[in-house]
Every structure is written in structure tokens, then in C-alpha cells.
Length: 561
RNA sequence: UGCCCGGUGGUGUAAUGGUAGCACAGCAGAUUUUGAUUCUGCUUGUCUAGGUUCGAAUCCUAGCCGGGUAACCA
Image (cartoon, rainbow, N blue to C red; front, side):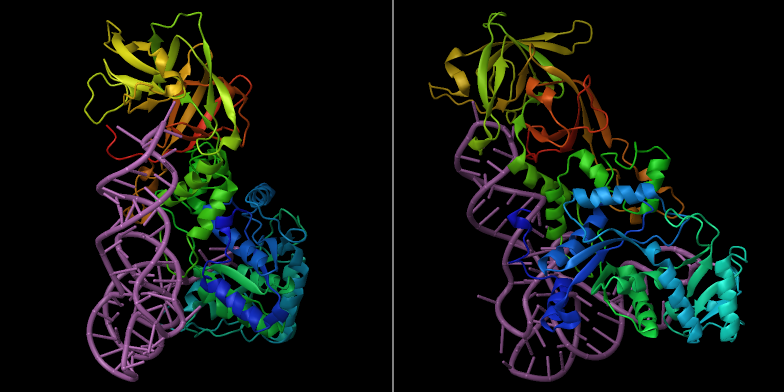
């Protein structure tokens, strides 16, 4: 990891401060152990990356360990497809969990035994209320709940019923196991929460071995405890669950990790909820979980984001309890910051306009040397060919240009990067449509390498590719998924999908790229000079077809003519 | 309406009772064979009202505003 990711000199966020205090105080013997606990019911996104960087980062910085644990207590939602993608994404981000990957389902037997212990201690009971009744009995914010009629069931009967639940004697929903806490608690989570529900469902790992499954609250804390977690870091919405988390561990008298909550990441102009992400995939609004417009880790990867850019972004946004929204520009800036350093440069013309150099014979071609990085000679050079016919960007020519436009115009000069200064003499148009189809220019042989020995100023420099050696490519340009910054702005009753940006994907065919790019490898980032950062599309590129994704554009001056 | 949590420039984030700093964005300038990069400078902030203190962004009280919360989801 690069220097600017280091946390050594940076001030500690409130969680790291707390961990540091605990270590200093010798809590847990000075040991630090965290965990990243995804539910395998969807793909990881940039919000998860924040959590991953936090948990793995803290473990690394304090000489501790970090577990990967799948929180798979709901067989209806979970699948091995998600398990595999999550493992791949965590690794790709640059983290390695300690030991094997863990699963809450590994603890089903242990959790079952804990439940029996609670029953034996008179702290849990089997309840026959259905979902609606439970809701009614729970009361409201302003009124206390009522005890379930089964709350006074004997320990023997509770144990018998619970064992028969496990044995599969009852249909789904007939009984639940509930904690006996306080139906009048101001914290709803403490009004006799459900611990176990009957679900005759196939689990992705335990198969049909179980027909009762623990709920999150009963599984999470004890899983943390079983693994010896010291700091259980989660998002803000679990804050109200902390008293329950602690209640179970105290009732069971087992190792007690400290739950600490932080604010999840919100990004502008995109969607982050698993539900909406799934909806985009299912309705075909995007090509899949790894569509380059998606804020998923695999989407960002395919888009061309580097793991270090994502990590750098995650450390730069900080960790607090304040519910904030980070501008998407911030993520993009992190990518530019990384790729500006590391990406070799190349030339590619996205919307080609042919230029004929009239004073250069067709049979003459010149080889020129081009730097792969303007500030890093150690990245070497490559050879590019200059010939009579070249392509330039249509946008780099203007027939009637304002003064502020300093690229090519009729009668004007412009420098071809790494080559010569050319002058435009004639604009050839399609007689029918009036569309500009070709420019007739001459080059100045005295300006080899773009230098002007006579000292005249040529302000504009544009990129180009030679027609003779150019390779065809498809280029995909991306914009934000959402037109609005936040879906909170969408009125009640409206479909949030109406806010999707219809221009989020623009496909350009017939782009002309320099021949060196024909050998581009998946995972290699390039800067196409003056156009942005690009990478080969991992899914749609092939031997016969070059497809490049624009990861992010270059920053652009606002007064560009 | 209860309970819990939060509120520092436009956006985020530091300052741990002692000079309100940094990043991103914005603006201005320098450099530049990428209108990129780099460099320099600038604008903008402690929710409100009381209190404690020599001194408060920080501690206390009240209010205001924002978020979370009443699945057999996680």
C-alpha cells in the first residue's frame, strides 16, 4: 500500500482512538480482533469497501487479526454465488482474512445450545403468537407492550417445544423462540425479541439439516464472541441493538466484544441499497452486477478502478457517526490521483476526423518516439508512426472558432503531440450534408518533435493517430447512474427508476487507437491523452474486438472554448 | 408521539478546555508539447440561547434541526 494510505501520522478516528485506548488499558490482554461480516445475499459495493478498509485496516495497524465471516442465518436470501463474489472482491481490494472464512452457519449447533441454556435459565420461551399478533402485543413507541400468553410457559414445556421445533414437527411460523426481557422497554429491541424462527428451507451450506434458524440479534453477537472478536464494528442502524447484543452475552456469560457503530457511506448520484442494486440488475437497466456504472466492487473493477484508489478514497473520507453524503467527484478524484501516477499514456481518437498532410508523400512514414509518462522517464518510450493520413478528434477542429479556442481552425496551426506543427488549408465537406469529412493540411518539417526553432508560439497541442496503423476500437463513456444527487429528493409514489440517467452509457464505435493498444491487457490502465483514463473491458473484449471503458475523464478547465 | 444517535466553510473531516487546520470543490495566477499534471495565492465555518471557566467547537442545561428505530430481514 502506498504512503498516502498510511495512518501513522494521521489523527485517529473515534473508533481507532477507542481501540488504542483499549489496547493501552490492556483490555482483552491488549489483543485486537475485528471482523467483516457480510450477508451473502448480494454483491459488495463501495459502502462495504469502507467497512472492509476499517476492519482490516484496524487489525493491521494494531497487530491484530480480522476475520471474514458470512452472516448467513437467512436461507431464503443467501447463495454461494454471493459468497464467491464477496471473497474475490475482498481479496482484490488487497486484504487477506486471517484463518479460513467463517460462517454464522458454522455455529448453528453452538447457537442452538445457547438457546437451550437461555430456556433453562428461564430467559427464553416458545411463543405461539403469529406475526400480526406479535406486532400487536409489542405495543408502540408511546405505549408499553403486553406479555405474550406463552410467556409463563414452564421451562420443561419450553424445552420440549423448542426441541420439537428443531425436530421439524411444526410448520413455518407456528412457533418462535423469544427472549424474556421487558415488554415495556423504551427500546423496542428489548420487547422480547425473537431468537429462532421455523423455516423449512434449504440452506446454501447446511442444506436441510436445520428447519429452525437464529435471527441476526441472536447470531451476530455470539458469533463475534465465539471468534474472540474484541471490537465489533457495524453501522449506525444497529446502535439500538447494542443493549440486546450485550444482554445475550451477559445472560450466557461468554466473552464480550465491544460493539461500535459508525455512519455508512452515502455517495451522490448513485444507488447503494442492495434492494435497488438488485432491481437494476433484474430489470436489465444495467448489464449485471459488474456493469461499469454500478457502485459495486466488481463494477468499479470493470470500470477500471484500482484497489489502491478505492482504499485511498476510503481512508480519505474518514470515519464518524455523522450521517454525511460524499460527492461522487471525490471518488473520481481518488482514481485520477492514483492513475495519474501509474497509468502509461497512449493516444486514441474517439471521434475521428481525417486529416491529409498534403506535403507528405503517401509512401513516406516516419517513426517518432513518444514518452509513456510525461513525468516518469523510467516508464520508457514507445514508437508511433506519422504518415500522410492521420485522424484527429472532431472536437479539436472548429470552422468558426472563438478566440479562446486554441486547437485547429482554418488557416491556423496546431501541434500534433510528439510530431509536427500542422496548418489547416482546406475543409472538405460532404456536398449533400455539409458535414466536414476531411481536413487538408501541411506540416512544417522544421518542427520535428513539436519544437518551434523559430520561436513562434503554437498554443494548442492535440493527440492523433496515423490512419495507416490505427486500430479500430469501441469505446464506452460513462456518466452517473442517477440524475439527482439523492433519492431522498424523489417524491412519494414516484418510481425512483425515473431518476436514472438515460445518458449514463454512451457507446462509440469506430474509434481509432494507436497500434500499441491492440496488445492491451485486462487490468492495465491507460491514460488516453486528453481523453481520460481507460481500460480494456474484461467482459466484452476479445481477440477480434477491442472494447475500452473510460474509467474517469481528465479534469477539464471550465473556460475551454 | 417514545427511545437512541448526531450537528465545525459549498462538501467532508481535524483540533482530546488554550492560535479553528486539512482535503475535495470553487476562484485567481505561474509553469506546461495533454486546456491534464505540478506549484502559488484567495474566498467561505463552530445550529441557537443560556451557564461553568482566566479561557468553550470541546463541559453542563434547554431549544432547534437531521438521522435511526415498532421483520419470524441483516
